[in-house]
Image (cartoon, helix red, strand yellow):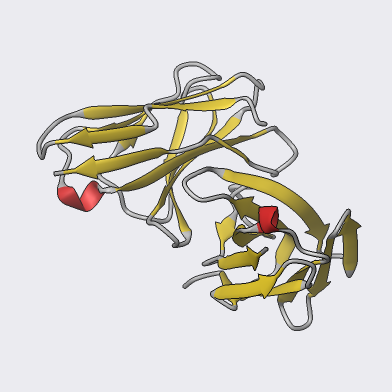
Length: 112
Length: 114
């Protein structure tokens, strides 16, 4: 089991709410990633970071934002949730020089 | 355009049979990886094969890579009900300045019936 944790595991919220999905890893990895995945579908990279104070947008346009103030923490924020944001969000990390990614268990988000 | 495409999309077999999944990609790669995802969970890394390797084994897993055809296959031998999961290939494309980004395929849903 990888030491990467996501909270909450499940979240049901109303339209317009601001939410933050948490992701923490205790492996000291520099690189962290956020993916969006609909059930049974492929993963889409929405944000990534190569270290503290480094954040980049991924391949899939997303209305979310991320921050990387500490190595171990990479939270994702939605300022105003909409039903189209309903999906599973997966966080991952990898160590410098190796690109094997370690995933958290995911947050399943439902926006009503 | 999508880097990795897998087939079949779904595969159902009996316990003890072998399962083969295929992955095709479009650009040059540094390496190709296979991951497993149990329902409702995150992905778990299974095996990595470098672009200069043709075959790799790990337990009941065998991965092949044909860079001329831009394709890879994952073979699971003597399957068990516990192998039921989705399997994804992921490519690390060479030449990217951003380094360790992976592009994931659409996945193959494997069901192993007891």
